[in-house]
Amino acid sequence: MAFILFLIIFFCLQSFVLFCCVAAGNDPASQLISDQEQMDYIRTWMENHQM
Image (tube, rainbow, N blue to C red; front, top):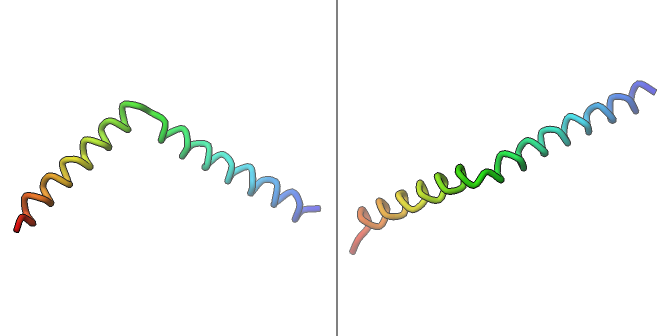
């Protein structure tokens, strides 16, 4: 019985962590910042690796 209770608690915690990760990725402002950071990185990389 304790093992089943442990499994239920474990999967509830895993679901909570997954929900938090999904919720954090849906913010349009953070997605815009992330896109801008990626573009800056690509621009810097291309400037440093020109032939």
